[in-house]
Length: 122
Image 1 (cartoon, rainbow, N blue to C red):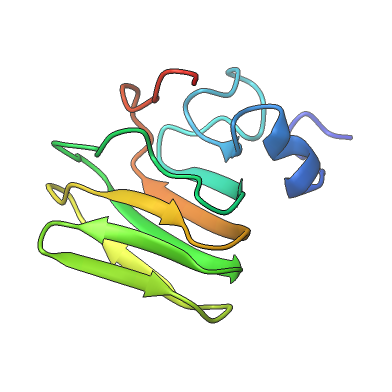
Image 2 (image 1 turned 90 degrees about the vertical axis):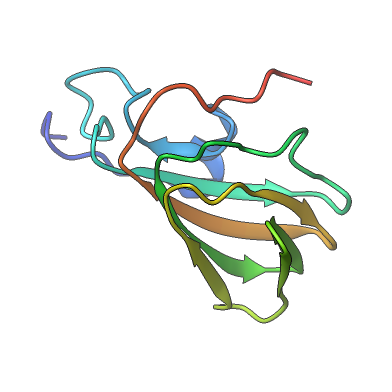
């Protein structure tokens, strides 16, 4: 493996870092380190939800449903992702939260990658 190439499995690798595969939190020099973008492979059991709303969002996000049924809460709007490939995009300044209505797998891409949004361990 080259120091600029990394191969893996999202399900396996994500389990080691709360779902996050790529972003500022990976060690410098790791091909998965990025200040520009974050990528998460989220696997959520039914009823799993974000402990608290993200407020003062400074990034843009894309969340794509891979499987299951997943709800994203936005100010004044609730978005249900029910079919594989359903997605929602929200931008800077849009607060959000989420809840898995069924066992769900989602792919999230956020940009830029900035510290400060980690939810404390439950």
